[in-house]
Amino acid sequence: MQNDEIPKGYMKNAEGALMPINKVKPAHIQEDKTVRRLIDQAKAVSAQLAKFKADAMGDAQAFRAMIAEQYGATKGGAKGNMTLRSYDGEMMVQVQVSETIDFGVELQAAKELIDECIGKWSKGSNNNIKVLVNDAFRVNKERNIDTGRVLGLRRLEIDDPIWAKAMDAISDAVRVTGSRSYIRFYETDLEGGRKAIPLDLASV
Image (cartoon, rainbow, N blue to C red; front, side):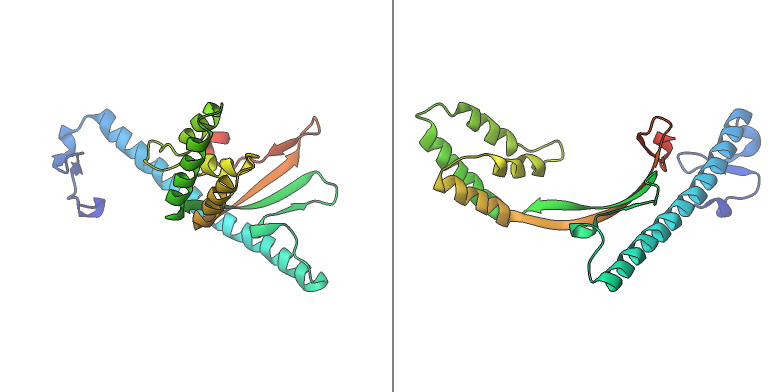
């Protein structure tokens, strides 16, 4: 039941039942009004932030397109990341694209190859590698494998052809399942350091 469906002189409680207003404590009535007013304001601010982000991203991408058109080169790095600076260097706008990564069935083949390596090495002193690998493939509270730990295995300098095949399998297993764009704003503070301009309530 929406608020506009609630009969005059009544309030809906948390169980969905209608209560006569004269039976509701004044403090609860005032609390309800306060929450609704703040929520309405929060929604308005959220909409303004969403519009500002869209406009700011559009301006940044338009500048990138202008540079590309003028010089035949793209401003920024791979995946849409770029940094724009004011002429005096005191202000900066940073655009970043963050990708969500998952793994395909090749990951199981990689784990089997790694286990084969560990079995072969177990005669030596590679217990630390075994702990590292098992930790990398351990699932988190959401029952997902930590992508950072698995991808981190590729940075290990291990000269073994089976290990190399396992690392290739990990690379082939990577699936980009989505991406999000972020835009951040910075200015120089009084000490000459870089200070972020907060646009989220927790940082204000």
